[in-house]
Image (cartoon, rainbow, N blue to C red):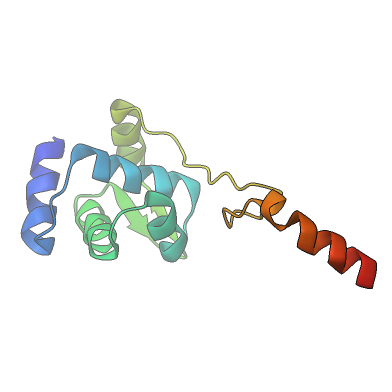
Length: 115
């Protein structure tokens, strides 16, 4: 089932596609109906995401109306593959920027004195 999708997407993109790639896109679609957020959440290359969505749409796994969503057939595929929605977890301290604020301790002390 997934092998045919993989081959079709690889033909279109010249990018190595894995079952996990399709699972990542499906999980992202379960999480958002916005194309750019799906690209971000899936953590897959833009062309791969775009072509995966198009192939899945043509095979009736995805519908595109006001946003992108899975059809019943797509939900079944996601369930069969064990796919769940993707959640982006952001550090509250650094707002997801990956900065360790402890490194800026002295600067923060000075800033607090001045303000």
